[in-house]
Length: 153
Image (cartoon, rainbow, N blue to C red; front, side):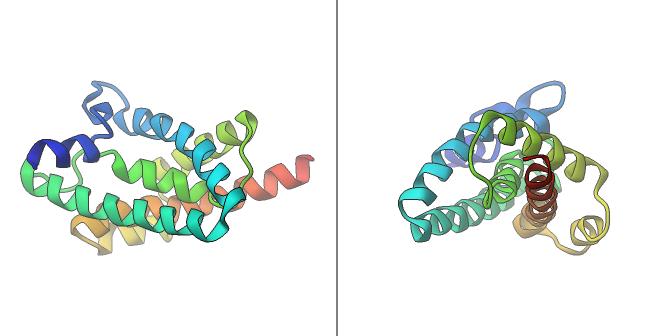
């Protein structure tokens, strides 16, 4: 079970990258945008269910990985970036341009952590704390991406 938890939490090992594991974890989530967009087009309810399930699995895996690693919010845990990027793209239609814009904005918000992202990161602990700030960063990134893409079209 430990191997499964770590495989999920590190997104198949992306979290072990020596440089920018969070960025690599987010990059690994880009194909998920394409898949979820297709699911949402076929069945919006199923798309939302998959997104909620992804966030729930991320919370579980992040919390379990923290206990295994003995570290709080370890850089090796990148499933939170996957969940955050999925939230960032939840209201966007897939294109490579949209994926890139959402990627850059998500990484910006996740790294800079403006309020309330920083507040969420400081206030919550465990798997919820690891994932929640990324979900909020994803919501910000998705909102800004939606506005920028709408204005530029």
